[in-house]
Amino acid sequence: MEISIIQAILVFVVAFIMGIDQFSFLESLYQPIVTCPIIGAILGNFELGVVVGGAYQLIQIGSMPIGGAQPPNAILGGIMATIFAVSLNMEATADGVGAALGLAIPFAVFGQYAVTLTFTFMSGMMAKADQYAAEANVKGIRNLNFLEMGVLGCLFGVLAVAGLYGGSALGETLQQFSYDFSWVMAGLDAAGGAMKFVGFAILMKVMMSREMWGFLLAGFVMALVCSANATTSGATLILCAFVGVAIAIYDFSTQTKIKQNAGAGAGYVGGDQDGI
Amino acid sequence: MAYNIPDRYQDLTPAPQLDKKTLNKMVWLSCFLQASFNYERMQACGWLWGILPGLQKIHTNKEDLKASMAHNLDFLNTHPFLVTFVMGIVLSLEQNKAETQTIRSVRISAAGPLGGIGDALFWLTLVPITAGLTANMAMEGQIAGAILFLIIFNVVQFVVRFGLMYWSYGLGTKAVTLLTSNAKEFTRAASILGIFVVGGLIANYGSTTVRMIVGETQINIQSLLDGVLPKLIPLLITLGIYALIKKGWTPVRCIILILVVGIVGCAFGIWSGNSQAMDADGNTLPGGYTPLVEWYEYPAPEEAAE
Image (cartoon, rainbow over all chains, first blue to last red; front, side, top):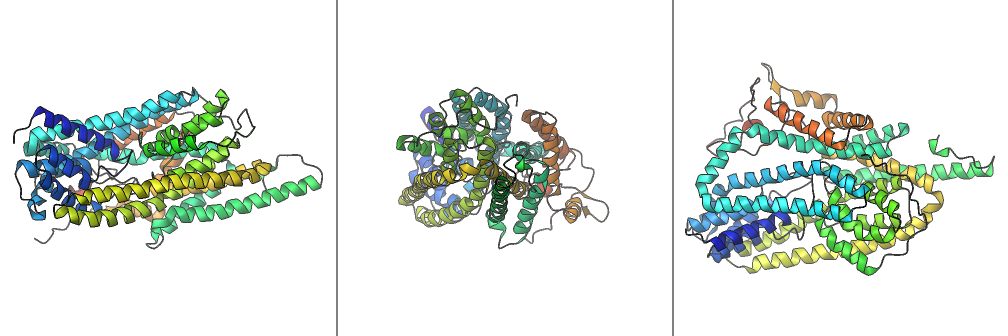
C-alpha cells in the first residue's frame, strides 16, 4: 500500500486526538466504532473501517476501563486493526477482519505502555503542581494539564505512524521486545498500582489524629467485607459511605449536645474537640 | 510540601453566589478532569484546573487562593461524568469559607463512592447498550451506527454534567449555612467520614499483591497473607508511606522509592504485575511476566484442550 505524507500526517493527528480523548474531552470519540471509520476514510477504504470498528467495538465492550484497571489500549488496537485490514485488503465482513485484530494486539500493548509511562512521569510532576498551587499560579496548573495531554497525544501519534509504515514486521519486533523486558513493564505496572498509597497517605496526614485510627480500620474492614460478597462488591464504596455517614452524623449530634450542655453548665471553655 | 496549608481562610466573610457563566465554564472544564491523570494523585491536577474559575471568584484574598489551590490537589478519584456533583458541594463549602480540613474530608467522602456509581451507570450500562446496538449496525457497514453512538453518549453525558453541577451547588449552599454555627463539630464529623472512606479506599483500590509460589508443594504466598489479613500489603504500604511522610519525606521521594521497589521486586518475581507481553505464539506469559532472576518455578497454566 502506497502511503502519502498527507495520510501519515492525518493518521498522526487522529491518534493524537484519540490519545487525549481516552481520558479527557468527550471520552467517546476514541471508541473503535468512531476511530476505525475515520482511519478507514484516510486510507481510502471507508466501508472497511466501519466494519472493523463495529467488530472491534464488540470485543471492547468486554473490557471497559473500570476502577483504574486498563485493558490493552483500544485506540492503537483500533487504528492498527484498520490499517492492517486496509493494507491486506481484507473482506469487509466480521470474519474477514478477525485476522487484522490479531495483528494489532502488539500495538495495543505498546499503547498501554505509553499510558503507563505517562502516568508514572506525571506522578513525579505533582510536586511541581504543589509548588504552582502554593504560588497561586493558575497558568502553571493549566500548563501541567496541557503537558500530559501533549505527551500522551504525541506518543500515540508516533506509535500509530510507526505502525503505518512498519506494519506487521514492526508488530513482531514490538512483541519480542515486550517479551524480553516483561519484568520491567510488570515492575512499572506494580509500582503504578502502589503509587496511589502516597495520595492516601497525604490525605491521612490531614485528617488523622489518635482517635481516628479506629475509623480508618473500620472503613478498611467495611470495604473488605462488602467486596468479598458478590452482590455488594460493585457498590463497596457507596456502602462504606452509608456507614461512615451514620457514624459521622451520630458523632456530630453527640458533640453539639455536649457543647450545649457545657454552655448551659459552667460556661463554654472550649477544648471539646478532644471528645469523650 | 514546603507550603503549610492553614486550617482557616483569612477572609471569613462568605463570598457571593457564583454566576451562571462561571458555573458553566467549570462544567466545560470538567471534561478535562483526567487531563493530568497520574498514579499518585489520579485526577487531582485536572480537578483543580476545572474548579479554578470558581475558586478565583470566591477567594479574592491571594493567600486564601493559595491555600485553597494547595488543598484542592489532594488525591482524588471519582467518575469523570459525575464530578460536577463533587464540584458543586466543594464550591458551596469554599464559598462559606469552611475550614480547609472540612472541605478536604467532604471532598474525598463525596468523590470516592461516586466512582463506583459512575462505573456501574456508564461503563457497565450505557456503553454496552448503546455501543452494542450501534456496533451491530456498523458491522453491516452503516456509518449511522457510529453517529448514533456519539449522539446518545454525549447527550447523556452533558445532561448529567450540567444537571449535577446546578443541583449540588444549590443543595450545598442551603445545607452549609445550617452547619456553620457548629463548625468545629462539623469538621470533626467530616474527618471521621473522610478517614472512614480512606480506609475503604485502601481496601477497594489497593491491588498490590505478591506473585511468589514457592517450595515443593507450591505454596502460594499471597493466599498465606490473605489468610492473615486480606489486603494486608496495601494497608502496610499505606501506613509505611504515612510514617515516611510524617517524618518529612516529600511525595516525590516516596514515588521514587515505590518505583525502585516495584521494578527491582519484579526483576526477582516478587510482585504481581501484568506486562501484557506475549510470546511468539501470541500466548500471555504465566504470572504476567518473566522475572529477570527466576529462583522459583511459576506453575504453568493448565493446557487448554485444543
